[in-house]
Amino acid sequence: MARAIPANPRRILLIKSHSAGIGDILRSSAAWAVLKKRWPDVELHLLFLTRWPGYPSEALIREHFLLSSAHFLPMQEGRFWGMRGVGPRTWRRLLPELRKIAEQIQPDLIIDHEPHGLETALVTRFLRYKLHDVATIGVAQVPGRGFLYDRASISFKEYARERNILWPMDYTERDFVALTALGLARHGQPISLVCTNAGKNWQENKLNKLGTSRLLGLNIGCGTKGAESRRPSVELLVAALGPQYLPDDVTILLSGSAEEQVINESFVEQYRQSWGESRTIMDFAGKISLSELTGLINACQVFISSDSGPYHMAVGLAIPTIALFNFEEPTAYHCEENIQILVAPTIEQLGVCLRHHFQYERAS
Image 1 (cartoon, one colour):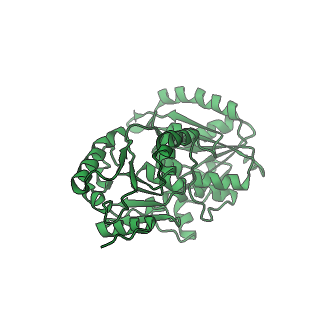
Image 2: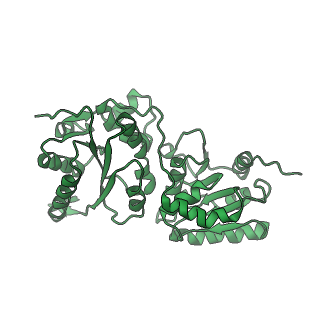
Image 3: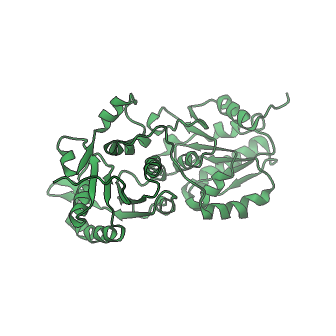
Protein backbone atom coordinates (compact mmCIF):
# COMPACT_ATOMS: atom_id res chain seq x y z
CA MET A 1 0.00 0.00 0.00
CA ALA A 2 1.39 3.41 -1.00
CA ARG A 3 2.18 5.77 1.85
CA ALA A 4 1.19 9.41 1.70
CA ILE A 5 3.92 11.94 0.90
CA PRO A 6 4.21 14.35 3.86
CA ALA A 7 2.99 17.87 3.13
CA ASN A 8 5.75 19.35 5.31
CA PRO A 9 8.61 16.86 5.62
CA ARG A 10 10.97 17.41 8.52
CA ARG A 11 13.88 15.17 7.49
CA ILE A 12 14.55 14.07 3.91
CA LEU A 13 17.08 11.37 3.05
CA LEU A 14 18.55 11.85 -0.44
CA ILE A 15 20.06 8.75 -2.04
CA LYS A 16 22.74 9.04 -4.73
CA SER A 17 25.23 6.65 -6.30
CA HIS A 18 26.43 8.08 -9.62
CA SER A 19 29.94 9.48 -9.22
CA ALA A 20 32.04 10.62 -6.25
CA GLY A 21 33.76 13.48 -8.08
CA ILE A 22 33.31 16.84 -6.39
CA GLY A 23 31.69 18.36 -9.47
CA ASP A 24 29.25 15.47 -9.86
CA ILE A 25 28.05 15.64 -6.26
CA LEU A 26 28.10 19.44 -6.09
CA ARG A 27 25.73 19.59 -9.06
CA SER A 28 23.07 18.13 -6.75
CA SER A 29 23.21 21.29 -4.63
CA ALA A 30 20.81 23.06 -7.01
CA ALA A 31 18.14 20.50 -6.09
CA TRP A 32 19.03 20.82 -2.41
CA ALA A 33 18.51 24.58 -2.66
CA VAL A 34 15.07 24.14 -4.24
CA LEU A 35 14.04 21.72 -1.48
CA LYS A 36 15.18 24.23 1.17
CA LYS A 37 13.28 27.03 -0.56
CA ARG A 38 10.10 24.94 -0.48
CA TRP A 39 10.61 23.80 3.12
CA PRO A 40 13.08 26.19 4.83
CA ASP A 41 13.18 24.20 8.08
CA VAL A 42 13.63 20.76 6.53
CA GLU A 43 16.79 18.76 7.27
CA LEU A 44 18.50 17.30 4.21
CA HIS A 45 20.64 14.20 4.68
CA LEU A 46 22.69 12.70 1.86
CA LEU A 47 23.28 8.96 1.60
CA PHE A 48 25.86 8.21 -1.10
CA LEU A 49 26.62 4.65 -2.14
CA THR A 50 30.17 4.94 -3.42
CA ARG A 51 32.51 2.75 -5.38
CA TRP A 52 35.33 5.19 -4.59
CA PRO A 53 35.61 5.21 -0.76
CA GLY A 54 37.76 7.92 0.74
CA TYR A 55 37.41 10.31 -2.23
CA PRO A 56 38.46 13.89 -1.33
CA SER A 57 34.99 15.17 -2.13
CA GLU A 58 33.55 13.44 0.93
CA ALA A 59 35.00 15.88 3.47
CA LEU A 60 33.85 18.97 1.56
CA ILE A 61 30.32 17.64 0.96
CA ARG A 62 29.97 16.81 4.67
CA GLU A 63 30.54 20.54 5.31
CA HIS A 64 27.97 21.70 2.75
CA PHE A 65 25.76 24.37 4.26
CA LEU A 66 22.53 22.93 2.80
CA LEU A 67 23.05 19.46 4.29
CA SER A 68 22.48 18.40 7.87
CA SER A 69 24.62 15.30 7.30
CA ALA A 70 26.29 13.26 4.54
CA HIS A 71 27.06 9.55 4.69
CA PHE A 72 29.28 7.68 2.23
CA LEU A 73 28.93 3.91 2.24
CA PRO A 74 31.29 1.80 0.08
CA MET A 75 29.78 -0.58 -2.45
CA GLN A 76 32.06 -3.29 -3.85
CA GLU A 77 31.19 -4.78 -7.21
CA GLY A 78 32.08 -8.24 -8.45
CA ARG A 79 30.68 -11.11 -10.48
CA PHE A 80 28.02 -13.32 -8.96
CA TRP A 81 26.30 -16.17 -10.77
CA GLY A 82 27.80 -14.87 -14.00
CA MET A 83 26.46 -11.33 -13.56
CA ARG A 84 28.22 -8.17 -12.50
CA GLY A 85 26.87 -6.44 -9.41
CA VAL A 86 26.99 -6.01 -5.64
CA GLY A 87 27.10 -9.36 -3.88
CA PRO A 88 25.95 -10.90 -0.60
CA ARG A 89 29.11 -9.98 1.34
CA THR A 90 28.62 -6.28 0.63
CA TRP A 91 24.94 -6.40 1.58
CA ARG A 92 25.70 -8.20 4.86
CA ARG A 93 28.05 -5.35 5.76
CA LEU A 94 25.85 -2.60 4.34
CA LEU A 95 22.47 -3.39 5.88
CA PRO A 96 23.49 -2.85 9.54
CA GLU A 97 25.08 0.47 8.56
CA LEU A 98 21.91 1.53 6.74
CA ARG A 99 19.81 0.58 9.76
CA LYS A 100 22.05 2.67 12.02
CA ILE A 101 21.84 5.72 9.75
CA ALA A 102 18.06 5.37 9.45
CA GLU A 103 17.62 5.17 13.22
CA GLN A 104 19.85 8.19 13.69
CA ILE A 105 18.11 10.40 11.11
CA GLN A 106 14.52 9.10 11.30
CA PRO A 107 13.56 10.53 7.89
CA ASP A 108 9.92 10.96 6.96
CA LEU A 109 10.71 11.11 3.23
CA ILE A 110 13.30 9.28 1.11
CA ILE A 111 14.17 10.42 -2.44
CA ASP A 112 16.10 8.00 -4.66
CA HIS A 113 17.60 10.16 -7.42
CA GLU A 114 19.17 7.32 -9.41
CA PRO A 115 17.39 6.20 -12.60
CA HIS A 116 19.16 2.87 -13.14
CA GLY A 117 20.43 -0.11 -11.21
CA LEU A 118 18.97 -2.01 -8.28
CA GLU A 119 21.26 -0.89 -5.45
CA THR A 120 19.60 2.40 -4.55
CA ALA A 121 16.13 0.96 -5.14
CA LEU A 122 16.87 -1.95 -2.79
CA VAL A 123 18.29 0.43 -0.17
CA THR A 124 15.13 2.54 -0.42
CA ARG A 125 12.90 -0.52 -0.01
CA PHE A 126 14.94 -1.76 2.95
CA LEU A 127 14.66 1.60 4.72
CA ARG A 128 10.95 1.78 3.96
CA TYR A 129 10.55 -1.62 5.61
CA LYS A 130 12.57 -0.62 8.69
CA LEU A 131 10.97 2.81 9.09
CA HIS A 132 7.25 2.19 9.00
CA ASP A 133 6.22 5.85 8.60
CA VAL A 134 8.63 6.88 5.83
CA ALA A 135 7.39 7.63 2.31
CA THR A 136 9.57 7.05 -0.76
CA ILE A 137 10.04 8.73 -4.13
CA GLY A 138 11.96 7.42 -7.12
CA VAL A 139 12.38 7.73 -10.87
CA ALA A 140 10.20 5.65 -13.21
CA GLN A 141 13.03 5.33 -15.69
CA VAL A 142 12.06 1.87 -16.98
CA PRO A 143 8.72 0.01 -16.97
CA GLY A 144 7.95 -1.35 -13.52
CA ARG A 145 10.52 0.67 -11.60
CA GLY A 146 7.92 3.14 -10.39
CA PHE A 147 6.16 0.37 -8.42
CA LEU A 148 9.17 0.19 -6.10
CA TYR A 149 8.27 3.58 -4.60
CA ASP A 150 5.25 5.25 -3.01
CA ARG A 151 5.38 7.89 -5.74
CA ALA A 152 7.47 7.99 -8.92
CA SER A 153 8.49 10.75 -11.29
CA ILE A 154 8.60 10.63 -15.06
CA SER A 155 11.67 9.28 -16.88
CA PHE A 156 14.72 11.35 -17.73
CA LYS A 157 13.83 11.51 -21.44
CA GLU A 158 10.25 12.53 -20.70
CA TYR A 159 11.57 15.26 -18.41
CA ALA A 160 13.90 16.58 -21.12
CA ARG A 161 11.24 16.38 -23.83
CA GLU A 162 8.59 18.21 -21.80
CA ARG A 163 11.03 21.05 -21.08
CA ASN A 164 12.70 21.20 -24.50
CA ILE A 165 16.06 20.36 -22.93
CA LEU A 166 18.78 19.07 -25.24
CA TRP A 167 19.70 15.40 -24.89
CA PRO A 168 21.92 14.19 -23.30
CA MET A 169 20.72 16.31 -20.43
CA ASP A 170 22.76 18.73 -18.34
CA TYR A 171 23.95 16.86 -15.25
CA THR A 172 22.54 19.50 -12.89
CA GLU A 173 19.03 18.82 -14.21
CA ARG A 174 19.23 15.12 -13.36
CA ASP A 175 18.28 15.49 -9.70
CA PHE A 176 15.21 17.54 -10.62
CA VAL A 177 13.62 14.58 -12.39
CA ALA A 178 12.78 12.92 -9.06
CA LEU A 179 11.59 16.25 -7.68
CA THR A 180 8.81 16.42 -10.30
CA ALA A 181 7.04 13.85 -8.12
CA LEU A 182 6.84 16.61 -5.50
CA GLY A 183 5.76 19.26 -8.00
CA LEU A 184 9.10 21.09 -7.65
CA ALA A 185 10.94 22.68 -10.57
CA ARG A 186 14.40 24.16 -10.98
CA HIS A 187 13.42 27.62 -12.26
CA GLY A 188 17.04 28.45 -13.08
CA GLN A 189 18.42 27.56 -9.64
CA PRO A 190 22.26 27.37 -9.89
CA ILE A 191 24.48 25.05 -7.90
CA SER A 192 25.54 26.48 -4.58
CA LEU A 193 28.57 26.47 -2.27
CA VAL A 194 29.91 28.80 0.41
CA CYS A 195 33.44 29.43 1.58
CA THR A 196 34.01 27.13 4.55
CA ASN A 197 35.56 28.14 7.87
CA ALA A 198 38.77 26.38 6.81
CA GLY A 199 38.64 28.32 3.55
CA LYS A 200 38.16 31.64 5.31
CA ASN A 201 41.06 30.94 7.67
CA TRP A 202 43.32 29.89 4.80
CA GLN A 203 42.40 32.99 2.82
CA GLU A 204 43.14 35.21 5.82
CA ASN A 205 46.48 33.57 6.59
CA LYS A 206 47.82 33.02 3.06
CA LEU A 207 46.29 35.62 0.77
CA ASN A 208 45.10 38.68 2.62
CA LYS A 209 48.70 39.47 3.57
CA LEU A 210 49.64 39.84 -0.11
CA GLY A 211 48.27 43.36 -0.13
CA THR A 212 46.48 42.94 -3.46
CA SER A 213 42.88 42.27 -4.41
CA ARG A 214 43.73 41.40 -8.01
CA LEU A 215 44.02 37.64 -7.97
CA LEU A 216 43.54 35.24 -10.88
CA GLY A 217 42.92 31.59 -10.07
CA LEU A 218 44.09 28.94 -12.54
CA ASN A 219 43.24 25.26 -12.33
CA ILE A 220 44.93 23.45 -15.23
CA GLY A 221 43.63 20.23 -13.73
CA CYS A 222 42.72 16.88 -15.27
CA GLY A 223 45.53 15.01 -13.54
CA THR A 224 43.60 11.78 -13.02
CA LYS A 225 44.25 8.86 -15.33
CA GLY A 226 42.34 9.15 -18.59
CA ALA A 227 41.41 12.81 -18.10
CA GLU A 228 44.43 14.32 -19.87
CA SER A 229 42.43 14.93 -23.06
CA ARG A 230 40.34 17.53 -21.20
CA ARG A 231 43.37 19.56 -20.12
CA PRO A 232 44.07 22.89 -21.89
CA SER A 233 47.51 23.24 -23.42
CA VAL A 234 50.18 24.93 -21.35
CA GLU A 235 51.24 26.92 -24.42
CA LEU A 236 47.75 28.42 -24.72
CA LEU A 237 47.69 29.40 -21.05
CA VAL A 238 51.20 30.88 -21.06
CA ALA A 239 50.40 33.06 -24.07
CA ALA A 240 46.91 34.16 -22.98
CA LEU A 241 48.03 34.99 -19.43
CA GLY A 242 50.96 37.08 -20.65
CA PRO A 243 51.33 40.86 -20.32
CA GLN A 244 49.51 41.50 -23.60
CA TYR A 245 46.24 40.45 -21.96
CA LEU A 246 46.85 40.44 -18.21
CA PRO A 247 47.93 43.47 -16.11
CA ASP A 248 51.32 43.13 -14.45
CA ASP A 249 49.91 43.55 -10.93
CA VAL A 250 47.66 40.48 -11.17
CA THR A 251 48.89 37.53 -9.09
CA ILE A 252 48.27 34.05 -10.48
CA LEU A 253 47.18 31.40 -7.98
CA LEU A 254 47.61 27.83 -9.21
CA SER A 255 45.43 25.10 -7.72
CA GLY A 256 45.36 21.36 -8.28
CA SER A 257 45.81 17.96 -6.73
CA ALA A 258 49.15 16.34 -5.94
CA GLU A 259 48.95 14.58 -9.33
CA GLU A 260 48.85 17.99 -11.02
CA GLN A 261 52.01 19.42 -9.48
CA VAL A 262 54.06 18.42 -12.52
CA ILE A 263 51.83 20.22 -15.03
CA ASN A 264 51.75 23.32 -12.80
CA GLU A 265 55.54 23.32 -12.59
CA SER A 266 55.69 23.08 -16.37
CA PHE A 267 53.38 26.09 -16.66
CA VAL A 268 55.51 28.17 -14.29
CA GLU A 269 58.73 27.21 -16.09
CA GLN A 270 57.37 28.05 -19.53
CA TYR A 271 55.78 31.26 -18.24
CA ARG A 272 59.11 32.45 -16.81
CA GLN A 273 60.89 31.59 -20.04
CA SER A 274 58.37 33.61 -22.04
CA TRP A 275 57.65 36.56 -19.76
CA GLY A 276 60.37 36.72 -17.11
CA GLU A 277 60.14 36.93 -13.34
CA SER A 278 58.05 40.06 -12.83
CA ARG A 279 54.67 38.42 -12.17
CA THR A 280 53.91 36.75 -8.84
CA ILE A 281 52.80 33.13 -9.31
CA MET A 282 51.89 30.97 -6.32
CA ASP A 283 51.41 27.21 -6.74
CA PHE A 284 49.22 25.40 -4.18
CA ALA A 285 48.77 22.09 -6.01
CA GLY A 286 48.70 19.24 -3.50
CA LYS A 287 49.16 21.66 -0.60
CA ILE A 288 45.60 22.52 0.38
CA SER A 289 42.38 20.62 1.04
CA LEU A 290 39.18 21.09 -0.95
CA SER A 291 37.78 22.99 2.01
CA GLU A 292 40.75 25.38 1.95
CA LEU A 293 40.38 25.63 -1.82
CA THR A 294 37.06 27.39 -1.26
CA GLY A 295 39.12 30.21 0.27
CA LEU A 296 41.51 30.37 -2.68
CA ILE A 297 38.69 30.49 -5.21
CA ASN A 298 36.63 32.92 -3.13
CA ALA A 299 39.53 35.40 -3.11
CA CYS A 300 39.87 35.49 -6.91
CA GLN A 301 38.54 38.18 -9.21
CA VAL A 302 38.39 35.55 -11.96
CA PHE A 303 38.89 31.78 -11.91
CA ILE A 304 40.03 29.81 -14.98
CA SER A 305 39.61 26.05 -15.02
CA SER A 306 39.43 22.98 -17.18
CA ASP A 307 36.40 20.69 -16.84
CA SER A 308 37.24 19.45 -13.34
CA GLY A 309 36.09 19.82 -9.75
CA PRO A 310 37.38 23.35 -9.04
CA TYR A 311 35.39 24.61 -12.06
CA HIS A 312 32.16 23.53 -10.39
CA MET A 313 33.33 24.86 -7.03
CA ALA A 314 33.94 28.30 -8.57
CA VAL A 315 30.48 28.27 -10.14
CA GLY A 316 28.94 27.27 -6.80
CA LEU A 317 30.80 30.10 -5.07
CA ALA A 318 29.46 32.54 -7.72
CA ILE A 319 32.97 33.65 -8.73
CA PRO A 320 33.35 34.87 -12.35
CA THR A 321 34.60 31.75 -14.10
CA ILE A 322 36.16 30.95 -17.47
CA ALA A 323 35.73 27.24 -18.21
CA LEU A 324 38.02 25.75 -20.86
CA PHE A 325 36.91 22.76 -22.89
CA ASN A 326 38.87 21.02 -25.63
CA PHE A 327 35.69 19.71 -27.24
CA GLU A 328 31.93 20.23 -27.00
CA GLU A 329 30.51 18.87 -23.75
CA PRO A 330 27.06 20.47 -23.20
CA THR A 331 26.20 18.21 -20.24
CA ALA A 332 29.05 19.83 -18.27
CA TYR A 333 28.20 23.47 -18.99
CA HIS A 334 26.83 25.93 -16.46
CA CYS A 335 24.82 28.74 -18.02
CA GLU A 336 24.88 31.36 -15.28
CA GLU A 337 25.53 34.99 -16.16
CA ASN A 338 29.08 35.18 -14.81
CA ILE A 339 30.27 31.94 -16.46
CA GLN A 340 32.05 31.90 -19.81
CA ILE A 341 32.38 28.60 -21.65
CA LEU A 342 35.23 28.52 -24.18
CA VAL A 343 35.53 25.47 -26.42
CA ALA A 344 38.97 24.99 -28.02
CA PRO A 345 39.68 28.72 -27.67
CA THR A 346 42.41 30.60 -29.45
CA ILE A 347 44.97 32.59 -27.48
CA GLU A 348 43.20 35.78 -28.48
CA GLN A 349 39.76 34.54 -27.40
CA LEU A 350 40.97 33.63 -23.92
CA GLY A 351 43.14 36.72 -23.68
CA VAL A 352 40.31 39.07 -24.64
CA CYS A 353 38.12 37.50 -21.94
CA LEU A 354 40.81 38.29 -19.37
CA ARG A 355 41.21 41.83 -20.66
CA HIS A 356 37.49 42.34 -20.20
CA HIS A 357 37.46 40.96 -16.64
CA PHE A 358 40.37 43.12 -15.55
CA GLN A 359 39.32 46.11 -17.68
CA TYR A 360 42.79 46.18 -19.14
CA GLU A 361 43.92 48.01 -22.26
CA ARG A 362 47.64 47.65 -22.80
CA ALA A 363 49.40 50.60 -24.34
CA SER A 364 50.84 49.80 -27.79
